[in-house]
Each structure stands twice: as C-alpha cells, then as structure tokens.
Length: 83
Image 1 (cartoon, rainbow, N blue to C red):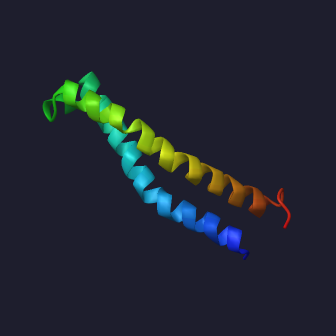
Image 2: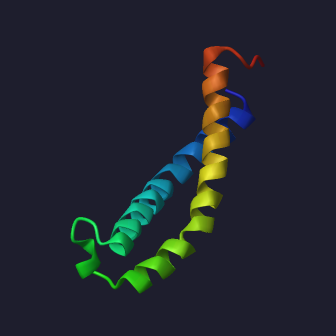
C-alpha cells in the first residue's frame, strides 16, 4: 500500500464519524424547523434554523475530502486507476 493510499484511507476513516453526526444533526434540525414528527417541541424553529444554517459549511468541509478519498479508493479497487 502506497503512502497516498494510506492517507486516503485514513481520511475516509477520520471523516466518516463526524460526517455521520453532521448529517443526522442536519436532518434533525430540518425536521425541527418544519415541525415534523413532533420535533419542534424540543427546540424553537428559529433556533433550529440558525443551527441548521451553521451546519452547511462544516458538512461541506467534511463531505468533500471524504468523497474524493473514497472515490479514489473505489476506483483503485476496481482497477480503473493503475499504480
């Protein structure tokens, strides 16, 4: 395994759990804003909107390296990228 493959695999592993938390938080705050499933009782929709808007950039910062590294490793595993 080359050094770049190790870095890509480590990137995928490091970003996966925080990314999962961010996606779940994004869904939950979205449901709080729209008052679905009774989640608006836990937080005011205005506060949920503020938190929801604050989650966009951290979600993007985690998603981009995770996706690029995972796509690289998948293409390498399928044999489309030769080394």
